[in-house]
Amino acid sequence: MKGTTKKSLERLLFLCSFVLSSIRTSTTLDTVTPSQPISDGQTIVSPGESFELGFFSPGSSRNRYLGIWYKKISMGTVVWVANREAPLFDHLGVLKVTGQGNLVLLNSTKGIVWSSNTSRAAENIPDARLLESGNLVVEDGNDDGPDKYLWQSFDYPCDTLLPGMKLGRNLASGFEWFLSSWKSTDDPAHGDFTFRIDLHGVPQLVLKKGSVIQFRAGSWNGIRWTGAQAMVRNPVYTYEFVSNETYVYYKYELQNSSVFSRMVLNASGVSQRFTWIDRSHSWVLYYAVIVDQCDNYAFCGAYASCNINKSPVCSCLQGFEPKSPRDWSFLDWSDGCARRTPLDCDKGDGFLKHAGVKLPDTTYASVHKSVGLEKCGELCSNNCFCTAYANSDVRGGGSGCILWFRDLMDIREFSDGGQDLYIRVAASELGIHPSLMFFLLSRFDYSIPIDHILYILLRQGENWLTNSVFSFFASGNNGAKRSSNDKKLLGIIFGSVIFIAMLAIGLILYIRKKKGKS
Image 1 (cartoon, helix red, strand yellow):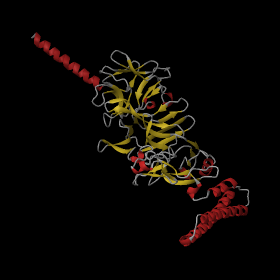
Image 2: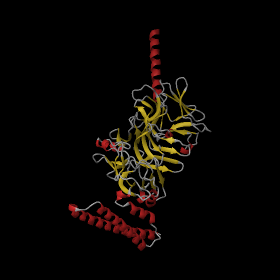
Image 3: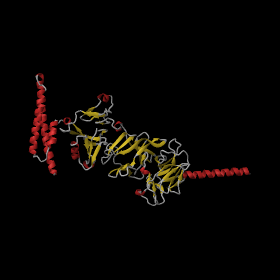
Image 4: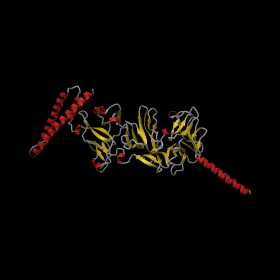
């Protein structure tokens, strides 16, 4: 009898412990406070139950991490991890909020393995809660609102950019928001890849492996990153780029709260945007970066453009030729191209327009937001170190000015969209004699009467024509070559007359337009 009673009691105790254990693993709270921490097996949930915070083990790992994941959809899709570099090795972790407002993660020996390191101490009793956006925030008592948070997880993105998160920098404090990949699907520690806004020169979005650029989305043109053609107006989300004296950042917001979308930088260095489809209960790829050869940074080298619809995909820009012809013959374009004709800034260079392109790397560029395209070209022309110029903003017909001062890298041609880029070349590449270009650039004055300008222009053109004809005869035109040379001479004379006439007419119209504006 005693044995039976003892066995019954053991079964009852086992059942009770099992029930208590089940309750423990399913306990959910809405806040964490100094008097109410959470331990492994407990979670806190956002008000609409879109997100959940708790302890988890990624992939096949047995290590434990504190993280945030989707709750209503896609259970197991983690979007944020606290202790990326300091895993727990058992199920005895505890998350608590200190009286000063610090979030601390404790191990089995009560040692701190991770802390939020809140810079401002709480004046009231602090609490931590998970917002419906997926943002874990620490509030100073009843003082809520983004400007009053003591700390928020959105300031520390991991590999996922959620709606409302930022990529960029606080210029006043130097604080940066950026994505960093996991080491692997089993290890959320910082991996090799980052996705961030590079502030050198003109701000641009880049994907790096260590310190080496793998992909460059480009600078912001008022509508999108210049190299991100997939960024178009859509019913899913809107995006915003802010650049002022205090902040430079990019973020996006969902237009419909019932839609779920996230941007992820995976362990292989691929940045992808996914959208949740209820019907199939799965994440569907919306777009990705580095989808073809031309997305690889500087794939064709300097002064070359990449066009995925051509074969070969790389070609030198007009006025340039392969720096290493032999390498190019073996489809190695990494050395890029060099100028066919050296520049002669003193006598005057020209600019060739390249339409529908991804603007070059802006690391060594400057921006002038209040300058139009015409003034932009003038600034570049007057600076012998300037290699190209373009509008910085394409809205409303174009405004602003970007000037480049180094080799032009990472240019891509688009079949649709893209921007206009004006590249500096020698005057001879435009079919204009350098002396005539120098004359036009050095002697032009709006105060000179039009008829006087035309007279000087035609006399200069006449001198250039005479020199061309003299050079023609000096090259030799006897014997059997006479008939062919006569035709060439007529071509030179006719072409020169047409050229000078067109130049004169264009100059008249341009001056009248300038006078009309004044």
